[in-house]
Image (cartoon, rainbow, N blue to C red; front, side):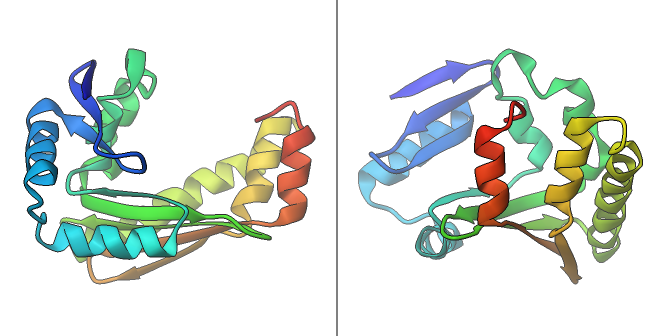
Length: 178
């Protein structure tokens, strides 16, 4: 069933698949799933993401749209309105667990220029963490994590990859910052 959550909804389509979005989109996903109809290219993308990842996501709207369905406005209006999140027209990615945990994502933007601007914003934020790592333990841990961040663009798509080595996972499990 679908559970209302702020301006959006969450539906568990089966034991391994959940859909998150506005109520109309969720109702359409439930109808498609019940009828066995494929959602066009989404179906093949979802299949590929599912095969390549242990946990995955796929959206056809700006990432800021996902923040509006978070409980109790946890993302905050700044995140919802951030220009870097408004430029996205879709995103996909996932987590692969193993000796290393690998997070990969692709963000599709309105233009090549938007895609090329996103790495600059992310590098700027990473630099801010670097600047504060000597005085803030959380910034130090995030900075260490982001040291493996790889950002590339191809036309209007930003691809990012982040690897969390096993040693860092063990440290995180015993860390007060989780």
